[in-house]
Image (tube, rainbow, N blue to C red; front, side, top):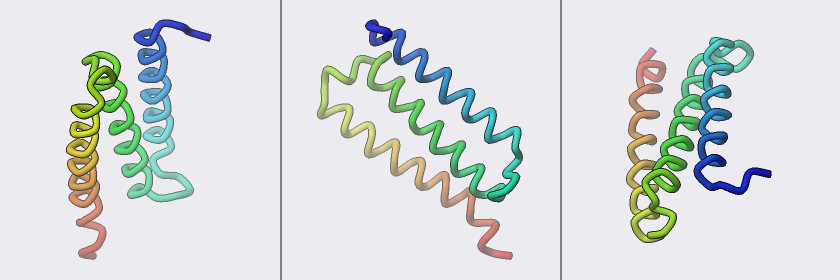
Amino acid sequence: MIRDATTRAWVMLMMLSAASVMVALTDGAGFGASSAGAVILLFAWMKARVILARYLGLWQAPGWLSGFNWVLGLYCLLLLGLFLAPGLVR
């Protein structure tokens, strides 16, 4: 078990990056390109939360962390909507 929080955060970022690459390499095989894009965006959101919490030290300021998480979540929902919008018009 890794005790250092920064090292744990780095390992988490590497795992999320590897998962993103694996989803991208499948090119949506089996579940569609839109779903693959949504999953990759979800991984990016999780990575941003790790960076904000651990590397910027917002875990020590729960109010700020919560605010950033809300804004980041809403921004990711906007990006997801923009990503999926062309498929709805067809």
